[in-house]
Image (cartoon, rainbow, N blue to C red):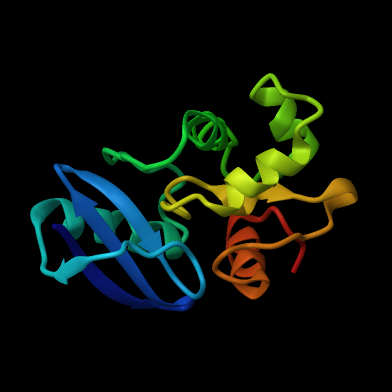
Length: 156
């Protein structure tokens, strides 16, 4: 069974879950939540919480955690590509589709992006619609705006 802890942040209450020595979920608002978990602290969850807090304070730009998102092979390809988007940068769904070698699959890439179970650590918030228009974010558009403001990728 997964273990999870919760933090109160400027984004609201954020949960982090782990199983088998890797982070499996970060959830806030309407984002993907694990089906079953026990609220219990572990050294890995404490480290993940520390790194997340540093990020939210503007002191960290990259995460150094074992991540194990559950999904289809295509979803995992998309999530791996998301990890290549630098801090403070946004790309479009079309650009992300090109990164995974499926230039005509922007819609499918968008769906995979929306199913990312480890938001923030796998930065799906850095993907925007054409011409920089903010599109859906499982944690909510306001959360996406806050994260992009934090990174300096969206003007205040």
